[in-house]
Length: 224
Image (tube, rainbow, N blue to C red; front, top):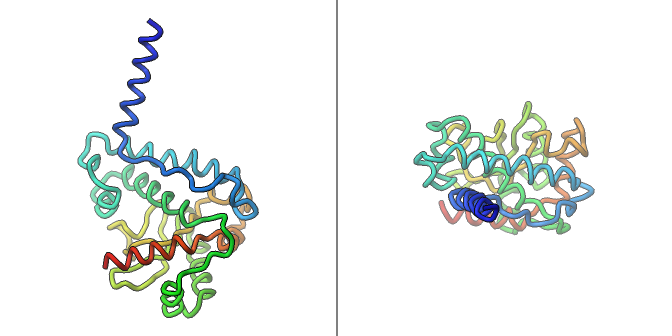
């Protein structure tokens, strides 16, 4: 009888796992890989609690709806027509899946020549771009994100969104394809930096994955 009960419970969990449309991608480095800039405890809580909750709640919110068969991009591009639970959790899932990849323990990565040229032409210099991103993050009241995106015209732009919104959503003013994002929710930095968001926004450049950002830039341009 116990074996049958265990088998039944296992089947339920297996079914739930199979039906879940969206899943977390494994973190591409250890929790402590970014130490000195982002501490291990923050990374573990951020990935295994906050981000995990977004994907779980997204799957729950879309169960039995047409969105169950849609891609994340399709959901985000029509999010104005969907419940707040879908908007918040779809955004949270997408934003964090991007965020993990644009960070790296590898030292001194550099933007590709193509991306560096585009940044310089758009913002004046790499340093001027970093200042603009830092301002977007620092000026975001409450929780949100700072973004580097490619617009429909193929040009780069920096923007900021509240909560878990992002430039792919049809509800934002500045729309485009995000290639880099900085999470400025307090849970992303508070254990190490407390209320010093500016220090976090400076430190994040030490672990920025320019190789991945450059790859995303090329990918975004190829779709124009």
